[in-house]
Length: 150
Image 1: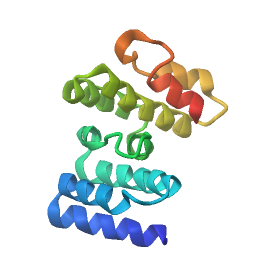
Image 2 (image 1 turned 90 degrees about the vertical axis):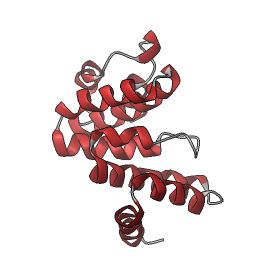
Image 3 (image 1 turned 120 degrees about the vertical axis):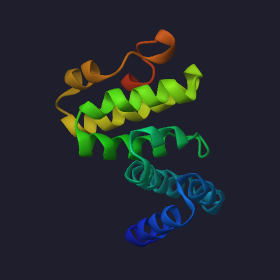
């Protein structure tokens, strides 16, 4: 599949029906696809969600495909766009809208990916220091795991 064509397709759907209905269509469209395709396209859709709705839109991401691809794509785009200043707003949206610690942790996981991608792999300690406090209090959950995975 041509990634650029997929990006244009989902940008058009978001513009036509809104981000949430387009995300529902996206999940249905990719439901029977290979995990690798689901994951890479989830990254793409996460980025499109950020562009369409700003930092609050991260709460639309969910674990439909059993990974954090949507959050990863979203936070990478947000941090690339706004720098580390985006972290506070994204984390606040995660905490305010998701409520459950397990969902907040998955949201924070994506933040970890975005931070290390932004800072560079040679800045591991700086990335960990930039992580918000983890939901549930486990220092090896959420953002830190996203950093280490990256």
